Image: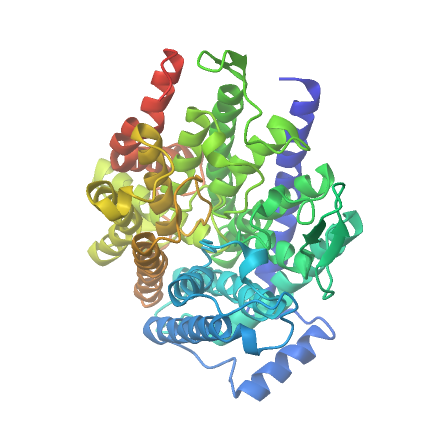
Length: 563
C-alpha cells in the first residue's frame, strides 16, 4: 500500500471516529424529552408543521399505533410517488418532454424509494422529469431515512422506559429527524458539491456541437441536492444512470471523499446517540467499534484482492470498470463503504471488482445492514444481534439474559429471530427461484458463476434495502420488477415491525438493577461475542451461496481458468 492510499483510508477512518461522536451528542439532544433542543427558526417551522397537520407532538403512542402511523405514512408516500411518475408528462418542470413512466417500473420505483432501497431499474436522466426527481424521489429520500431514524429513537425509549406503554410519537420523531438532522446536513453537503462543480439547475438540457459536427444533448438538472440527501440518508439512488461515477454527481476526488464520509456520518453517530438515550454511553461505543472492526476487515481484504496478480488477465490488479479519476483505491473504498452502510450509491461497476472484493460487497449487504448500515436501520438491526448475543451469553452461564437492565424473554428472542432471518430467507428463496425458471435466467448478462453472482447480488441488495447492483442483469424485466418489489417491502418492514414490537415489550418491563451476575454490555468480552455472533450467523446463512458464487469465481480465477 502506497503512502497516498494509506493517507486516504486513514483520513476517512479518522474523520468517522472524530465526527460521529460529536454528531451523536447532537442527535441525542434533539430527541431528549427532558431537555428539548431549541434552535431559533427551526423550532418555529416545527411548530407550524404540527399546527397545519393537526398533530399533538406530545401524544403518547403504543408500539402498534407507532407502527400503524409509520406504515400509513409510508403507504401514502408510495402512492404519491407512483402517481407523480404516471402523470409526469402533464406536470410542470418536464423540460426533457418525457412521457409517463411505465407502470411496472413506476411501481417498483415507488416501493424502492419508500423503503430507502432506491433500487433503480431505469436511467434517471432519460426517465424522470425534474419535478419527479425533486418532488417524488428526493422527498422520499428524506422521509424514508427519517422514518428509520424514528424507529431507533422509539427503540431507545422502549429500553429506557419503566412500566410504560408509550414509545413516543412517530410524527414528532419524523419531523425532528428531518428538520434538525437530515435537512441541515444535506444543505451543507449540497453547497460544497455545487462549489466543487456538481450541477444544480432547472435549466433545460444543454445542446452542444460535437467534434464531428453533430449535436450532443447533455442532461443537467437539480443534481447536487439529490446527491446530498442520497449520501446523508444512505439512500443511494442516482440522478444519472452512472450514479457516483458521473462528473456532475461526483466531480472531484474531494467530493468522492465527502460522499464516502457522508455515508457513514449518521449511521455511526446514531450508535453514540443511542447509548446516551438509553443511559449507557459505553454500550453505544461498543456497537460503533463492532461495526468499525467488521468494516475494516472487509476493506483490508478488498484492497488486497483488488491489487493482487490476476492470472487470467495477466495483470497486477485491474482498472476495468473503475472510475479512473479516483483510481482503484477511491473506487474500492467507495464500493466497500456503500455496501457496508447500505447506501447503494456507486462510483464503479461492482461486477468488475475482483471476485473476493465482490464477495466482501455481497457479505456486507447480506449481514442485514449491521456494518453501520442504513440511517436508523443499521443500528436497530445491530441491536437485534446484541440481544441475541446477551441471550446466548445468558445460556452459557445459566442466568436469565438481560439487555441494558431489561429481561430478555422468549417474545423478544422470537422477534429477533424474525428480524434477523427475514432478509436471508427472502434473498435465498428468490435467488433459488430465479435460477430455476426461464424468466429469471433470460435477463442475465453473464452465464455460469457470473450469472449466479448477478442473481445473488440482486436479491441481497433489494432484500436488505441497499439498492446497488452487480450490473449485467436486466432489472427492468417483469420477473425481477415483481420479485424485487416483494423483497424490498418484506425486507424493510418485517425487520422494522419486529424491532418496534421489541420496543413495546421492553417498555412495559421494569429496569433491573445491576448485580454481580449481570452480563456487561460495554466491555471487551461483549464486543468479541457480538462480532462473533454477527459473523457466525452470516456464515451459517450465506456461506453456501457465497461458495457457489464469488468464492468459486475467485478459485477459478486464481487457477487461471476464468469463469
